[in-house]
Image (cartoon, rainbow, N blue to C red; front, side, top):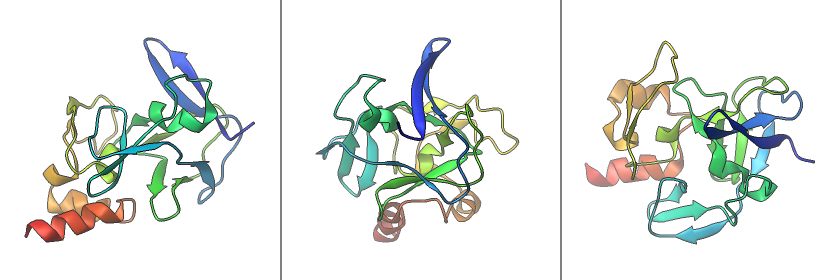
Length: 155
């Protein structure tokens, strides 16, 4: 059994830790099918490269990343060069694992109003492209390399 499990909470799925996870520890490996066309459930892994889960079934451990939710104060991030989700801080057993969607998505296919409730909540999540320079700097460590490349190509 891996470090995470997916379960239904109220009307949505969530990913939680099955045991304590230490800061810096790899949580899960990104595996899936590639496409140049994103959707609400894909993760952008390159300029025009998006990863889709092999399965839409919550019990399929290799597809857990599909059910990760957003937070403006995340406890994990994707290390794209290694293709893994990594703990930003210690995560306790049964704690929800969340990441900041703007650290992988240049422009969201389905922007939304954030309800994470954190003190630094951005309210509207549209993608890295729409972040202020201050927010980009704050998220620099967590942000995928392709976002930084896309940003420099535009200017």
